[in-house]
Amino acid sequence: MSVRIVRLGTPRSEGEGPRLGTVRRPPRGVRKEEYAAGNWYDTWLPELSPSAELVASARAAESDADWAAFVKAFRKEMAAPGPARLLDMLAVLSHSGTFSLGCYCEEEAHCHRSVLRELLSERGADIA
Image 1 (cartoon, rainbow, N blue to C red):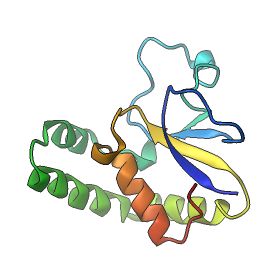
Image 2: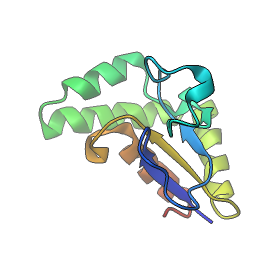
Image 3: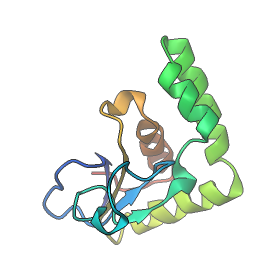
């Protein structure tokens, strides 16, 4: 039982469980009925994605300081009551079920999913 942090659109691992898409927008050019079959996500959870402004700042980050500023701002967004409750719930569910969450970014180290991994870990989630 655990949560996996994945890149959406990649092949699923055996036993991965349902995928939660923590992205601001659905995949382009993909029909809604094909999201799960195309390994994008089974359900969409945009509440755990950065705001449009933060997405832009993350994409523009050219230095460690730029990235650190993004991380700080995203953590602030995730501290709001709604996202914080979702993260708490996912941390609890990770002990009794298996699921994954992710984003489209190729490199996790420069993706908000790396911050989600940290936030879930801080809440005691079981992370694969």
